[in-house]
Amino acid sequence: MTIRATNQADVIPLRPLPAAADPAPPALPPEPLWRDLVGEVLRRERRAQGRTLKDVSEASRISMAYLSEVERGRKEASSEVLAAAARALGLRLADVLALAGERLVSLTAARTRSRSRTLGAVGGGRPAGTAGPAGPMGGVLLAA
Image (cartoon, rainbow, N blue to C red):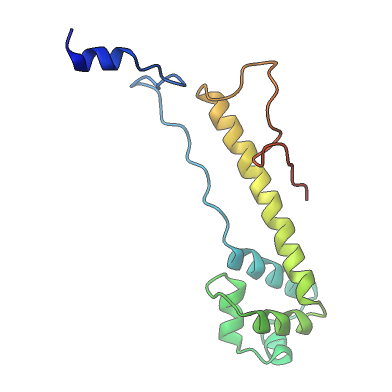
């Protein structure tokens, strides 16, 4: 036996390698971007109030084109712009950020559940009946 073959024989994989015929595990969805979450909140609140983009644009003194791009997550708005948009919608900046944070937590929880199912399907989960950290923070769970 060669030195290389001896070294390879000592390697013990931590989880089984997928067989060549096994399909690759599904990829996780990408992490959400903060600008997308904030834009969703602004658009949802504007529509819930039955207001047009033009109306909120005029009330906030933000150009309609720029406000549209913020709502679609195409632009990273400054805190001043976000505060002006929030005020025009009758909200505080803290309200908009809290709503975006709640959405981030729920998306992250769904992503974690998806990852757990994916890992369990390919043999990377914990054996049945064993305890472990309750979440991605090693025992800290975030709730929406």
